[in-house]
Image (cartoon, rainbow, N blue to C red; front, top):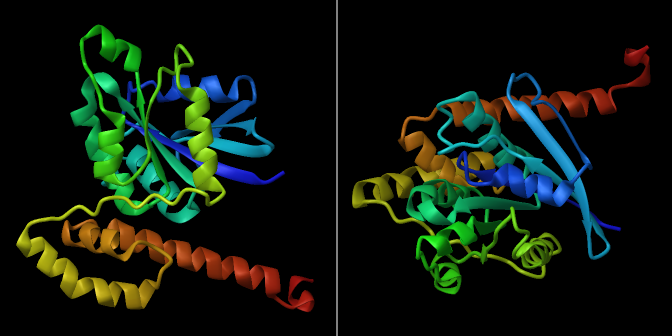
Length: 241
């Protein structure tokens, strides 16, 4: 049985926690993220012979690290690299929710957009063409109602297809104005030289251009942590004694 890690991201009040509870049932536990006072919820489920750990990231409107919640969500996607990130969107406020979805799509290609509350959207006369959205954005888009368990099996199937590598999304690349694109073109090669393919160099370039130096600090801290871990694992036995 293979094991995969799935991250749930989304704005507050999109029904993300309802989906988390629907998938994991009683197989979940809560705590805090390491070094943070931010609550962490983690659960598990099985599907088609494989095991999945589901991590419910803090509800955020963006990943610009203006708060501890945003920092936790950003760092998990970038540094822990879940096998799939499911972005939960509110079908009744889709445009407002797309900001976070587009940010996640810049960070990882392994994305599913999950349009929740589709039953509420129908009551309001809102019609959403998931196929057209998927074609435009380059990632799977599914419509569900977590509360009514509508569309859940289809969602689980797509998550598995991405996790095992059968489906390879190709997210649309966001194009910025000419000035920003010029600056990205100028600094991205140097960023790529320094960090290789470990992190998305274009996304890092955009964050630095926007003045978010915290991402570089976080990457340096992560690198130091990994080097320390390597040293501890491989240090001579006599030093341990």
